[in-house]
Length: 287
Image (cartoon, rainbow, N blue to C red):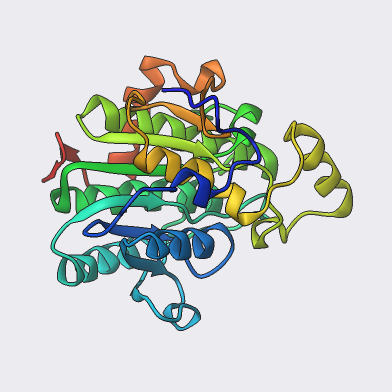
C-alpha cells in the first residue's frame, strides 16, 4: 500500500515511529558498514533481536554475529549452519550485502563477482535458512535502480566468453535480486525488493569521479543519508498491505524495468540459480 506521508526524504525512524519490534529476530547481511550497519542499529533501537551476518565479525560491536562470505558457497553453507545454532527462527531476513561496479573478479566458485555476491550467495543463504523462517516472515532483498541497465545475460551470465562490463554486470545482478524476490513470492514467502536510493557508502569505492557524477544524475534524486537509505527497507519489513513480490523505492511501491518482471525470467532464474548453487527449496522447505 502506498504511503503518501512517506517519500525520498523519509527516515527509518519516521517509518518505525510507534512500531515495536520486540520479539522479532532480524538477520542482516553486510551489516559491518554502510547501509547494513545503519539498518542493524535502527532495528535494534526499535527492539529487534538482531544478528549481523558479515565477512568480518570483528567489525561489528555490541551485536550477535555470524561469519558470512557470500563469494563462497562453502562460506554461505557455514554461515547457514551457524545461524541454525544461533537463532531458533528468523522473522526478518535482510539480504543487504553487495558489491558495485567492481573490476572483473571471480568468486571461489568461478562466478562473476557481482552476480555471485549480490544474487547467488543470497539465493543459497535464503534456501538454507528457509526452514527457520517464521510464519509471516519477510525477506527484504536490497536491489537498485541500476537494474535498468541490464536484464539477465542468459548466454553468458558470468562473462566467460564475452568482454566484461562492470555496469552491465551490476545491472544484471540487481535484476536478479528483483526476479528472485518475485520467485520467493510465488512460493508463498513474503518478499520485497527495495531500492534504497543513492547513498555515499563504501559501495561506491570502485567508482571514478565521473562515474560518481553519473550515478548521481541517473538516481533521479538527491543523495540520501543512511537513515533515509534504510527507510524503504524497514518500510518493506513492517508496513501492511504491500503485495508480496513488490519492488519498492522511496517508501512506495514502484515499477521496475519490464525485464525484471517477466514470468519466464522469474522461473528461469530460479531454476538456473538452484543449479548454480546446487541447492533448492520447495514452498519454503529446503531439500
